[in-house]
Amino acid sequence: MNIQDLEKLIKGRRSVRQWEKQEVPDELLKKAVELATWAPNGGNYQGWRFIIVKKKEIIEKMANAVQSVADKIASWPEAMSWQEDVNRYRKNASFFRNAPACIGVFSGVYQSPMDKVLVARESFDREAKEILGFRRSAPTAIQSAAAAVTTMLLVFHHMGLGAVWLVSPIQAKKEIEAILKVPSNMDLICLIAVGYPDESPQKDRKPVDQVLEFVYPVRNNAPLLPPGQAPPQKGSCPGGRPSWAGG
Image 1 (tube, rainbow, N blue to C red):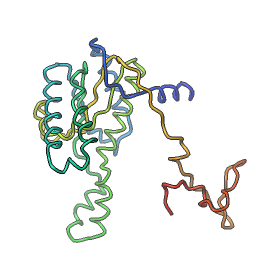
Image 2 (cartoon, rainbow, N blue to C red):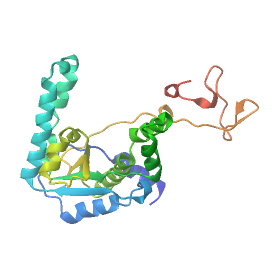
Image 3 (cartoon, helix red, strand yellow):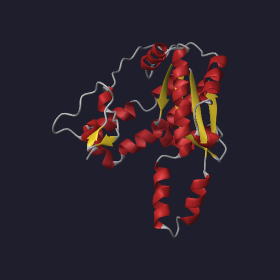
């Protein structure tokens, strides 16, 4: 595959929320999961597990659980401050009940050797506790599962299927894990709803220059730029730092 074909695949993928009633063959779902397991993961731990649900009654139970929690959150008085957004979220919380298949993505806890050292010291070492907090802010298990899900979504798109990455079901984590009889040492990360698409959503992306920053070597108090690139305009940040990067 050349870079143009890869770019077309990546840029052509969309989150699909409406599906035809056609069943998705088991072999396609299994192949997508197989390829997802080749995604990069922390320490090659491969702590992920996947449950493919095609039984309509089980998908309905999971959707009802998510909807129930969404309704509860929306009923709290604090929700009035964001009523419009909360109502929109509540309305769309369980649309995945119409998906021909849902894939539960789970992961066991991963603790690297560095984590073990930090855990051993966190009770009496402020710096170790702070570093451990940094690591816990983006857990290895979550990063690994995210890489697998990204891979899976691209595979589904290549297969002509439409899928959507569902993070809202985490609010019904306890209920979904009970419905799917998940072992206690595994945690729900997300659900993937998938089927043959019955819509063609279109979404744009921010220009890459709005989200990208280069850090160049500096010589004589001026950044070294690639050949042909003009130096920053007077008053701009050295190295062409975007506005979101801060000072």
